[in-house]
Length: 156
Ligand SMILES: [Zn+2]
Image (tube, rainbow, N blue to C red; front, side):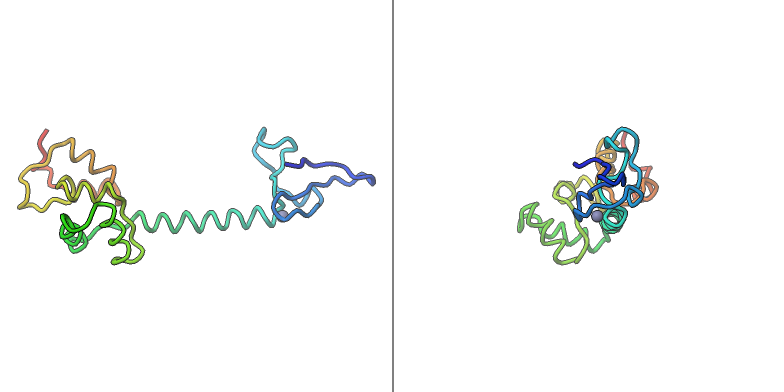
């Protein structure tokens, strides 16, 4: 990437890697020390700002998808697909049916295997190992996850 330079008139300039315009270094934000040679962001202020704005929007969207909890109806629907659809197909069909909610194949696999989202009548106890394994898939907070599991049914 082009570092800042001085032109013939002694202007301190730098070319933006994104919009390719050459602008005074004052139009660039500083970078963390040691990342770029000139200590400036590779893109101009305008480009850097729009990059972060896009990144934030993307992350906010992801965060929103992640915090979705599965309802009883949704879990029931997933269980109904067992034997009809593959795990991958179920995950895909789920996103289609329930719009923006994404679940990954391993969640489907664990629901199919009865390891997570077990109905109280379905299994009397849940081993602590399955509980811990399920926690990595649980999309809510740890508190929500623990609240969703009856501690009296946990087998150590
Ligand atoms: Zn730019």
